[in-house]
Image 1 (cartoon, helix red, strand yellow):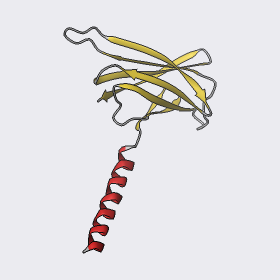
Image 2 (cartoon, one colour; image 1 turned 120 degrees about the vertical axis):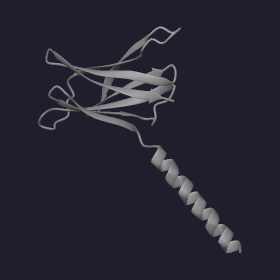
Image 3 (cartoon, helix red, strand yellow; image 1 turned 120 degrees about the horizontal axis):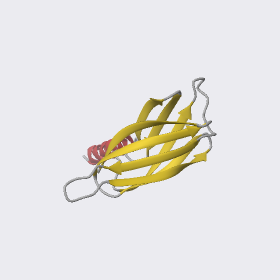
Image 4 (cartoon, helix red, strand yellow; image 1 turned 90 degrees about the vertical axis):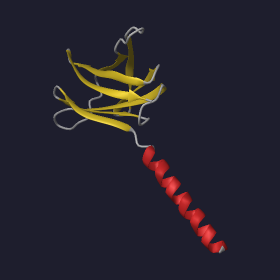
Length: 133
């Protein structure tokens, strides 16, 4: 009987650990922005009220990492009854072969995100929406 209880507890621990690993997956969006392939990941899935770390990987048509661009992340929430629109911006910094930024989402609900890529005198962008919890 004691071995059966130990086996059951071990099995529960393995299942709980597996569930924790699966839920730790980043929120990720991949889209084309002009001539670039852009992958944006947020360290929380779903994104949460408060700080969320954003990683941005930009690749050119040859698949090479773009490291000489200026990246701006604009994020906001549309106006609602009794509440004005919210609009924020943060500049992403180059870290290795990708860019990093931090978004502070001030409330739960749908947030519109625009990643603006400025390089060689041209600006292009990708847009997506997240639902913060």
